[in-house]
Image 1 (tube, rainbow, N blue to C red):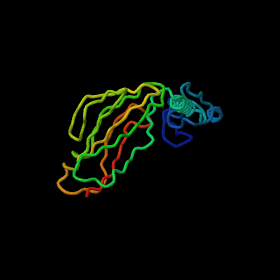
Image 2: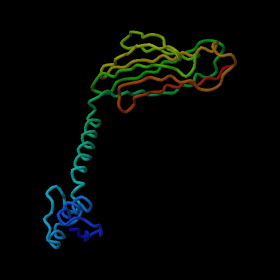
Image 3: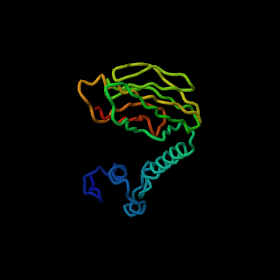
Image 4: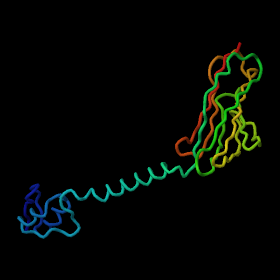
Length: 194
């Protein structure tokens, strides 16, 4: 025999009414089941408590991530400047050294160096040891490690002779790091060829 659901009016078999109420109307309060003289299914939560497990997970993840990043347990890239104006450049090669350091508690890894133009290249010096010279189309597997508290130098090289005409603008050098706050660092040089 079919009955109409007292909440939505849907025809439901009498023996399935409790299951229907639990599935279709999960926020139905326990007192309503008592009024209808129906036993509430065990797997149905009453009221708005269904969000509690989700809230607990979200709070735990947020706190955990906050503690991880606030504690400084990982590497931390720091540079006093990421942009440098080379000024007026004649048809020659000029360079600028960008110093950076690891202010974290684990090794800072740097790799994936590339540049925005063939006229710009770079190399990294760590502990007095110079890495390979890398440019726009250089695909290398070089990776450097800077221990906590140590510093390194990125030497940006601009070769004006690579340009077919006089160039005024900026060139970038990109470096990947394992610092979660700065996974890609961009060093910029400004150029004004005469």
